[in-house]
Length: 210
Image (tube, rainbow, N blue to C red; front, top):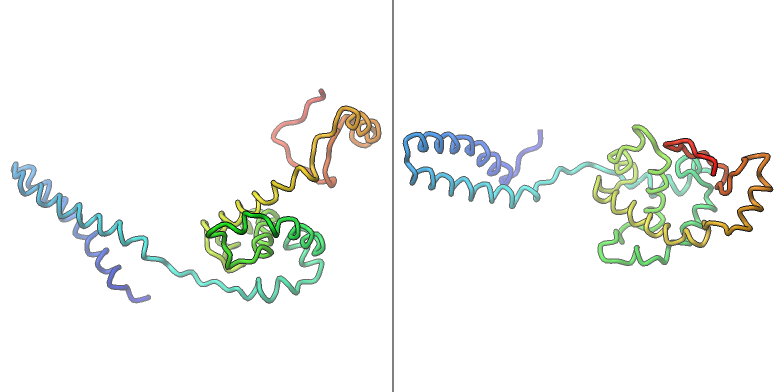
């Protein structure tokens, strides 16, 4: 078992003694010793402030390795690459080129220690995962990044950059274009105006004819 730091020992001592102080407060309250209650409350308040001030400095180091992302991901064959990131390598390179100059990755604290390619790979892997494989801790450990906050920031940043590209590639067709699409695809997908890549998307409700 790892040895506790001096700060951890102090916090543990203060928290253990908090219950004793609460018992003293109850005892003095019963005896109507208001001065004693006030004095103990002040001490307890100061000690709790100390605990709150330093507890964020106590971190549990979770071992992670960057070996997989640095030495394995870049050398995967096409099948394994597609399995991990759900797209071909040339598609990944194209997507990366579209967002590589986006201001989202130039802002302060924008995880500049992580390449944009790595951030995109993390998000694609996350989108292609489900069940246990979608666990934040598992993804963070696989890619050697921080749990929770870091992964969330990377995901939000990549999404914001990708959403800016949507109007260039996905848009609602005008009236004439809709009629043409329906006529040309009626025997395959009756009354369907738009579908992308033939990918099935689960809907919460069945669509209605309109």
